[in-house]
Length: 335
Image 1 (cartoon, rainbow, N blue to C red):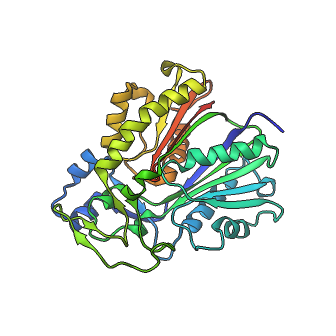
Image 2 (cartoon, rainbow, N blue to C red):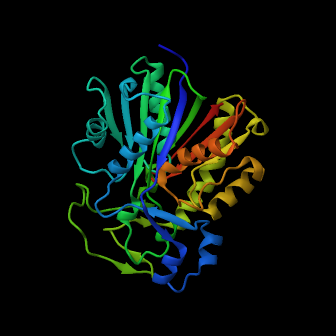
């Protein structure tokens, strides 16, 4: 057993279909390209094809990761797949992915259902498997196709969400040591970001769509997000989360070289950065070309920061995910 776990490599995959702000403005003339870019911070987002699932995207991301050459398929001991849009109620998508990737059969594989905090939670699970001596190399996958949950007339959420998948190897050695976690849960806010029907509590469609004063659909059959409540939750919980992560990792805020938050939307990120008093050059933004990809935002941002040189050796990186559940989590990576 070991007391340390590391991120060894990261890759991500975006579906081929791209929806630009021009496309959205054609559907909703009351929007403008400039308004979407200014308020939401997204110029385009990738959307899964009708017959393309989160597992399909995750397989592409994993194949891309293996092609990078840092890890071989035969060395994977465990698959973790974070998704809120699984292929089936059963079987577990991670089991299907194991077969599609041609991984060994004497490995573990499971799904876990979390949204915007999912990557941080996944790192905590992977670290537990490594430090517990259960696995040496964990393939942590995130995959989300929230656009399949969106009503075609939902002009708010359609500007925000993109589909994507990511693949991360967590191992006994690598490029970034995974530090100590701070995790939180408040299920009392569950109904503020929810798809109510389709599961076993409400199996059948409700067909109860109504339109609010802004012309946005409100329906049990599609994604519902109470934006003001989500914003309040975020402002109440993220600053204390950052303080707790810093304390648990024995760091002062000015010792953190880079902050990588869940990429929710530009307005929320700007507000949080200013509230927590993080300098712009130490706060990473990776939203404009992919949108809010839920559990995929943080690993996409990490990969981009690695590629553009923002993330470099001898740097402490603080990750923070927060959202649906309510759920939140943070950790420090030591590069």
